[in-house]
Image 1 (cartoon, rainbow, N blue to C red):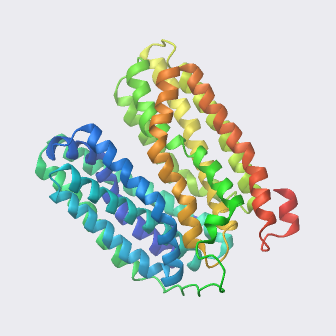
Image 2 (cartoon, rainbow, N blue to C red; image 1 turned 180 degrees about the horizontal axis):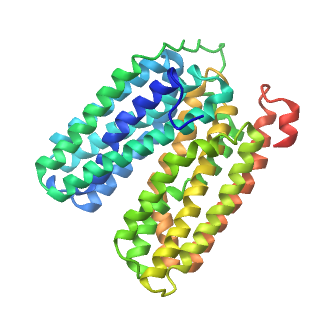
Length: 409
C-alpha cells in the first residue's frame, strides 16, 4: 500500500486524521507555555492537571469504546470529535486551576474515546487482512499533520503573545470540527447488538490474556516518553551536543514514520509476523538505549550529534516495528463487533505510558545514567520476547484463530 491510501473509506479516514493532527501538533508545542505564561499556572499545577485528565481518560476509554460498538462508531466518533473541540475552546477561557483541571479531564476523555471509536470504525470499514496496512497509512498521515502543526506552533512560540497561543488553540478546535465533517462522508457501520443475558457488557475487562498482551505493549510504549522527554533532557544535561539536536531527532523520527511506516507494516501478515516484529522492536530498542548511553561519555559535539542520530534511527525503526506488530495483535485478538471496547482498552496503555512513563524513564536515564539506559533496554527486550507466549495464550481462547497460526505464534 502506498503512503496515501486507496480511494474509499481508508482515504477518508486518513484525511480526517491528517486534518485534526495538524491542530494537535500546534497544541503539543504550545500548550505548556500557554498554561504557564499566559494563564499563569505553575508547572506543577499543569503537570497535575494533565496527569489527572489522563487518569480519568484511562477509566472511561473502555466504556466509550463500548458505546461506539453499541451505538455505531461513526456517530460516536463525530460526537467525541466535537467534544474534543469544545474542550479546546474551554481552554481558551481558563484563567484558574480548577477550571483548567476540568477542561483537561474533558479533553483527555474525549480524545481517548475518539481514538477508540476511530479504531472501531476502521475495523468496520476495512477487511481484517488490510487493517494493519491502513492503520500504518493513518499513522503516516497523523505524523505528517503533527509535523505541520508543530511548525505552526513554532511560529506562535516565536511571537510569544497571548493572541498567538489562542490562535493555535482555535486552529486545533477548527481542525477537529473539519475532521468531524469529513467523517460524515464515511458509510455508517452497523452497531453491535446487545449480548445475551448474563454476558458481561465490558467483556474486555475479564479477558486476562488480552490484558497481559496490552500490558506488555504498554511497556514497549515507554519509547514514547523516551524520545519526547528523556532524550531531550539527556542531550541538554549529559552531552556536548548543541540544543538544536533535540529538534533534529524529532524531525528524523517524524519523517521516518511518514516515509517508512507503511513499508514496515506491509510485512505484517498475521499474528506470527506481528509477534516477530515485536521481538525485533525489543532488541532494536535495547540497541538504541545502548547507543544513547555512549553519547554521554564526553564525546566532542560533532561526534555526540552523530551518535545521537544513529541512536534515534534505531529508536524510530523500533517504534515502527512495535506499532506494526501491536496493531495486528490488537485487531487480530479482538472479537468482531467489540473492537470499540477492545481498542479502547488496548489504547489505554498509551494513556498510562503518558501518565507514568515520563517519571519512570527520566528517573532511570537521568538518575542512573548508563546503567539506567541499559536497564531500560533490558526491560524492552523482556517485554518483546514475552509477547509471544502472551499472544499464544490469548489466541487459544479465540475460536477465530486457526490451529496452524496458533502453532507458529
